[in-house]
Amino acid sequence: MGRIAAAGKSLAGALSLLGLSTAFGTSVWVTFISSYVLANVLPRQQFGVVQSKVYPVYFQAMGLSTGLALLGHLLGRGSNFVSAKSEMLQAFNLVAAIALVVVNGMYIEPLATKAMFERMRIEKEEGRGRGADAGPAAAGAELAEEDAEEKEEEETNSRLSRLNSRVKRLNSYSSWLNILALMALTWHLVHLGHALHAVAS
Image (cartoon, rainbow, N blue to C red; front, side, top):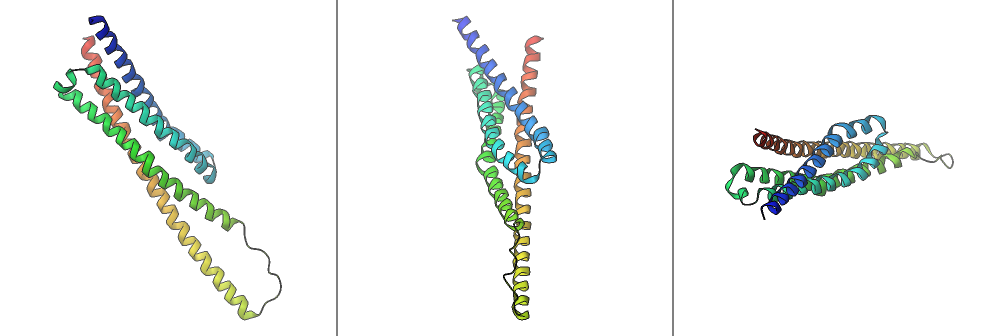
């Protein structure tokens, strides 16, 4: 019976470590490396398309791996979970990390992607240009048409400016949530390091 319990704790520890290492490594890579490299290498529209495909997978992977770390943490502690305050804090810490990932993946990221594609659509339409005039028109009609075009251009520029601000704001929120989740994972990593050091000594 003791061997089975020990094997169960070892398996739970392996699950926790696997989930934590996957979540931590993925978060560091996407937050600090991949996003900046792609943003500097790809044109903005291509980067937006890549980001819209990568981020949903990223948040799913983060949620699953952090959940695996939480499951391993709970199973590995057993009855000590309730009595040990530090273990409960770490469980709440991992739950908070999962909550941050869920909010980011289900709310912030879809809003940012929607605004980004709307901006891309407007930019694409503006890039097409307008067709040539069919024939000569009266001076008054030309002035009216020019005024209408200028007004339309101003409205488009204003809309693009609002969309740019919205995309930047949402991306900023997403980055901060990523960093907060990474801080929670780092805290859990430090906790595991202290626990391993205590066992070794």
